[in-house]
Amino acid sequence: MASPDAGSIWFIHPYAGGPGVGRYDRPFHLARHWQALGRSTVVLTPSEHHLLDTPRRPGVEQIDGVTFEFIRSPAYRGNGVGRIVNMAAFTAQLVRQGDALARRHGRPALVIASSPHPYAWFAAEGLARRFGARSVFEVRDLWPLSLVELAGVAPSHPLVRFTSWLERRAYRQADAVVSLLPCTRDHMVGLGLDPQRWHYVPNGIEPDAQASAANSDTPPAALARSWRREGRTVIVYAGALGRPNHVESLVQAMALQRDAGQNSAAVIVGRGELQEQLRQMVATLRLEDRVALFEQIPKKDVQGLLREASAGYISLRPEPLFRFGVSPNKLFDYMLAALPVLFAVRAGNDPVAEAGCGISIDPGDPQAISAAIRRLAALTEEARQAMGERGRAYVLQRHGYRQLAQDYLRLLALEAP
Image (cartoon, rainbow, N blue to C red; front, side, top):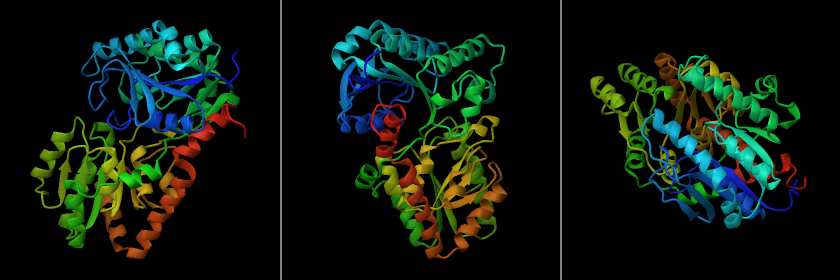
């Protein structure tokens, strides 16, 4: 096996993003800091996937100083056969192009295969073996449990059986397993992972970049600022608008707020399959004067919006899968902005309670959400600021990408302690 002191890092991610690329920007930030530490890094991702801001041409591209290679892959829509073909094609192309990738980016010392889906592990395992590199299986979502418990696919389905076999293989074969979820160790050990090879490296934040790029002139930020000037308690949700996100509970809570004579409002920013349904709900409940929905805005503008809010809101539909914990980017964005957080999530961990930076409530309970907004509004401005500052201190200490990048390499013995 090659010495870990030589060679580059290949970060394989099926939905990698970054500035102008897409919202899953963890690979971008880790790669940027690894490069600053002297570790040559390339992010390998498909040229077509559903989380790209715009389709990319196959080939090498520099994204704010980080090397990406977009691997030719077929376009698809939805969650059908086309998406499976895209996954398979991406994996096959990585294997086929291994030698060419090494010529362009240097032989790897470390090959990382990151989920959500685990199928690129085949390529990572093969490439690591070919070049004598170490391999890392990075787990953001637990598959096939996500297919069974969230998507409702039968445990006997061939795809579930195949994915279960692949998951066990990755736990056995990877030199290390990095989990973004804090409570997965026992589950993975039960599936064959040596506990010494389990590591926890959560999602993170970039405090310097986000602070300097914050833009308070976007329409949602301007509206939040206007409502705050009217003396309203303004709750912001910035994230996906899908079934798992349970944002309809916030809309329902705002109706209760209105009926109780509370001077509150909500700004909802995002994109997803329930977007139109939420608009219709706002209209049906006649909440246009206190609930505003906006299209997704660039991540660099989110901090500008959060600066104008009274609190950030996050919710997830209750699912057994969350017993393994959560690591949501939007939560860390709220904390970074020193916002009190309304945390409507039931999971194996509760960062808001740990930090003392908000109010934790049961998801899907509009009455409890409305009561939490009233509690927040009743606090003095000083108490709300102190609550938000506790969250900011927590996230800066535990979730800065610079530190996470160093921890990642140190855990894998690629950097001296």
